[in-house]
Length: 362
Image (cartoon, rainbow, N blue to C red):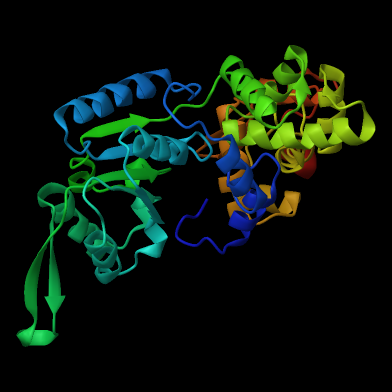
């Protein structure tokens, strides 16, 4: 997604998808109720959880604030949840803001100067913070001090402002965009991995209990297999299946109910939705599996280029269904198998070889 502009069409499209990892509206309210309150309840991310537990316990034993923490990974994997757990484990208040909300150094200075000692400052999408604010943050993290500029031009004066010790928890989906000086100031860095189906089943069973929904292991496994390795998507699908079970069945979620419900919402067995399948079908049926340029593929699907590239392709590439090559997008054998189609080269004497050759007779 183009993180420089949240108002773009592709951002809106990503947020509207049932398998999109962005959280908005009802998602945010439900997530607050389903979030684990401490590390012992947190499912998955075993390495990050164990390492973070050591960092926090050591800080508590010393009676000091915890080191600054950087959490990176795709949306929906639990970065915000972990930040709240850090605050709970340290018995400290938490202040939540985001990089896009801090466009001037003065914005950051106002937040930092109002922090209490030991408070947790959670800065989401930290890589999108403005450069002047970023440079101010260097000194705040290292020396717990900021210089406030008073006046303009030659008469401007820098007034040092001492800050109480605090812990910054930064979250980012694009760790590579963080400048090295900022990354180096974090005492602990944790990378959040996608969940495996077994971990997602534990998430789903826990959420079902909190939502007072009866679900059997096969039903949970079916939802987990379609959740793209992301707890946020798993919880969203669980709620949609719950609705289906309540309206069209006896309220109990089984494998059959899960399959029927997710068929209604156009989420297939591998977690692909309408947009994902449209991209694959255009690539396979119109272009014989490629290679084909991104712009041409986007026109064939009827979507913006950015929507195809930033919303649909990452999951298709991660699933091994599509490859990005210098010559264009290419479908893998797994894509043909998933859609139940036969590659042109395997179609016998009538096969055309590549899709473009078949279209243009070259």
